[in-house]
Length: 625
Image (cartoon, rainbow, N blue to C red; front, top):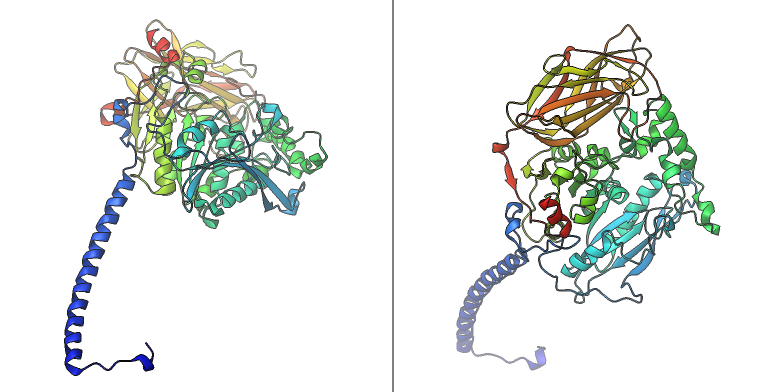
């Protein structure tokens, strides 16, 4: 009010006004206090309602819920409220190229990297932001693996996420790694160019105006390796909140070498397996001329001949786990088939415990399946054979609650909705039973040690192992006087002499019933140049020095019944491994320092549970046999 319109107030009126004003202010303060309390209470109620979105039950109660268990894959318990956001194409997706800077030493398209990316979004109210679940891999729009354009959701995973999880308020993205699909540069086989492209894609997703800044990566096999790559960048940006690697690689060398022994793919992995990706005969193929296309094959072959530590910089560039443990601040939901022939379970065990020890929030799901998703009954049936190759654990291995499990995981780590998912490992034994472990391998196991030539009696074969796999010893235990439960990574330590600095041993552990019908329990392989374990090449005097080959089995979880016997065989080769490049006769020495070491646990101290029962036709047929 300006001075020209000011009114002079009488003194008495002023006193009355002050009295009324004071009372009014007092009442207002009380009202504001009460309002604040009530508002907080209302917000708490709203928050509680948000926290209780959907059905949430612990894993040991899921068998009581109405899961759909007769289809070809798992489904969430409740349909989400959002439709997919329509776009200009028939698949309701949008496509973009994400640009990023490539170091000049990467060759090819450097410095102008470009990643092809497609996105599907839920139709949410204006101003509502959503988290993103993404899959990064080399298979989108690649004729060699018969996949369509990247704008079409992958039938193996994308369709399911879009149909079931997107309606709950999540976006989904598919991303082609460098040199594949419409992404430029070279197919770098998990090298620096690929890693930088993956990181750029994650940052782009987190920075969009429709994004809430929370990104998850999920995928299987190669697509299960790219999440580890992106997680290496850690706190450089805080968009990547969680990763779900399914049978993914913690490093490229780890895929192809075990205890120094080479897998059949090892010498040709870079160019022989993935070299044709991104080469389609157009004018941009010149961008695929990159240094690692020359280094890769040479590295693989020289590692096979001279030892897998040769040309270490190639492997160091493609090893992810150490950098994840050092830099990553998100969570990990690690999924692995314990009978995976393609990406062996040593990618997940003991990686699981390394994550826990690094303070990373982590959960594991380890079933007795092959190179598969956990919820596909037809594939799990077709690829699980009796004889200790997963068949004994079917159909109990089928996890029809998996898609709901993913929804709850993403709700918590991408939107902070619901209680924190259990930080445990769900592990299935070779006979089908499921239980929970706080660590894997568990911490509270006892070692059952059986010496070769004593508790393990030589029953067949020769103590001389020839390079052509024509000979080798076979030992048997006495019948067990109680059922034993094995977990983790058994060992066989065996004293040997060799005729050269080299040689190889393959160990097979079997479970034999009283009729002497045996099934596979586990296997191990070792290039004797790495006989001490670890990554350092050893040397010794052939024929004179006795060395101890400290072999580790592939991770396993098994129940061996009372009355059964254990059979251990040694040969020079087995599974899909190559013969040793350093051929040698290996002589086995029995005695107290040559032992089979098994880690056993007490089942009464574990929490067992039953997943929702599979009623798909494959499962019912298997159950009736």
